[in-house]
Length: 293
Image (cartoon, rainbow, N blue to C red; front, side, top):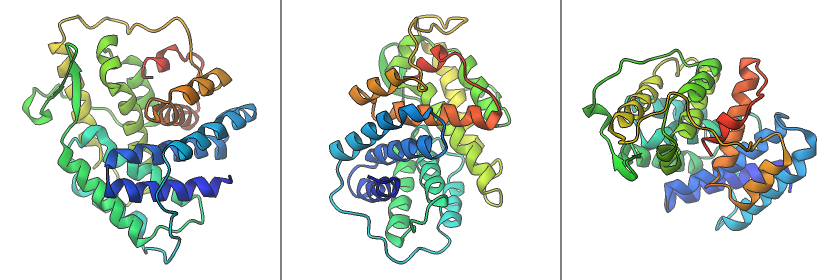
C-alpha cells in the first residue's frame, strides 16, 4: 500500500472512532506516526520493511467499516481545530489526548494532498468534546488506578518553557517509581503531549502560543503529587532495564509487531526521534526511553 492509503485510513479511523469509541483514535495516531517515521527519514532505510509490516498489521487488525470519502474540502480546517482546542485549554483532558489527536491529524494533512472534509471536522469536534467530558484520566498509586482532581491538589509552581529540549529533559529527569509507570504509562503521555504542544506552537503561532501549556503543567503537577501518595519511595534515579529496545534497530519493530502496547511503541518512537531532530541532538542511550514502554 502507498502512504496515502494509510493517511486516508487514519482519517476514516478518526471518523469511526468518534461514532463508537474515541480511544480507537489511538490507531489513527499510530498509523500517522509510522508514516511520518518513513517520510521524515527518522529511522534507517533498512527498517522500512519492518515498519510497513506494522502498518499492514494495524489496518488488518483494526479495520474500518468504510473508506474515507474524499469529497469537498472543509475550508479553514486547521484554524477551526486549533480554535476548538484553545477554548478548553485549561482542562487536563484525559492525558492531553485532545491535543495529541489533533496534532497528529493536522500534521499529517499539512503534508499531503488529502482534503479534510466536513465529516472529518465534525468527528474531530466530537472527539475533542468527548475528551473534555472524560476528565483528567486515572493515575496509578499503590497499585490502584485512581482519579485525582488536578484542581484539588497543591500547586508545585513548576513550569518550564516548552521546547524540544525541555520536553526531552523533563522526560529523562522526571522521577517516578517503576511500578507506577508500568501501571499507567504516564511518562509516555508527557512525551507525546509535550511534543504535540511544541509542534502546534510552531505551526499555528497565530492561535497557539502558551495557551495549551496549562493542561500540561497540570499533568506534571498531578504526577508530582501522586508520587507523595506512593508508599514505596521515589528513587533518586529512575531504575532502567539492562536491555535496550532501540527504535533505530530491527529488534524494536519486531517487538512492536508482537505487542505494540495500543500503538504506543509507534507514537513514542516518533515523538522521541522527532524531538531529538528538532533539538539538534542525537539519541545515544535508549534505556531511559525504554522505561516508558
